[in-house]
Length: 401
Image (tube, rainbow, N blue to C red):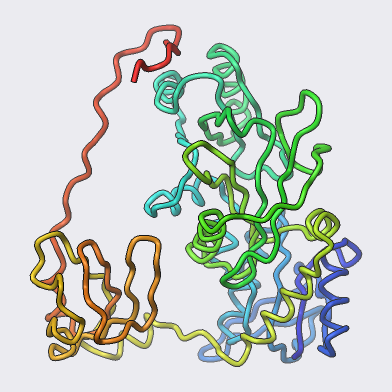
């Protein structure tokens, strides 16, 4: 395999370890400075130049795109994708995960725990937003902060207002987030490679510091995650369009609460703590994937007129309940069930003899006309009752419930 590591810091720990792991396994590997690429666009022939010379062929890339070069970095990764080069992180996944608001927006439509979060711009909307996330104390976050920078704990409404107003006056976008008190000063970093968690650590803040980041002096300890945390981390990674990710989660009373998904997670802290060869796991995964290039499904479906992919829901009382897939009549209507989702279970390529149950969801490919009548009408989500009008202070008295 010929592997390129896209990194501006060839001597940093993560880049060195990836290069070392690839070389040890007999792969050809080079570190390429992301900003030295030129992107050439021509009909039918997307191409890349490196240091003004045509780029040689690569089988795969590992993007290590820093926050300061997200736009250009994702453009380079996107060009590699158009050239059918396997990437450990999709360009869309990098862009989506880099923006904390966008990341949580994408995750919020799925059955994944996230801290209650709100995003406002008008000063008059700040107080209602604070109450909606449960009142003070709250966490205030810059949208593109890293390593704990731009994460502030506000313990009173007046302090929160002052911080938000100051940040917004400097044209900073901020999130207001519920403070998960039971997880104060600690969080979980799960390192996902492909469809499994290869390592996990708990980060614990020291002294009066509430941020647990290693760069803020937090200590680390190796942990073995239960299935709920592992499934959450893997699902977040896949939803974001990543194959390698560091998923940060709070340990709340309600289970894992995902704070963010990192597309370029550092290796030093987690390898040092766990003594595991995570760089090697990344290289082994990539080597196993390069013979299976991704297919642009949208482009392929566009030439299959009348066919498409949709998700069918089996509600309570459906005539399909208790029947197997072949008895349901779907195959006769030229509808193929690709994946069956049952609760937290994901069953790819289910057997035709598998019996359908209430609330099953079927990812299907087939005739759109046949499937259209099976898709239930959208039901409006019940909105929360309107909040009482706030004046100058938020009532933080605990709910008697």
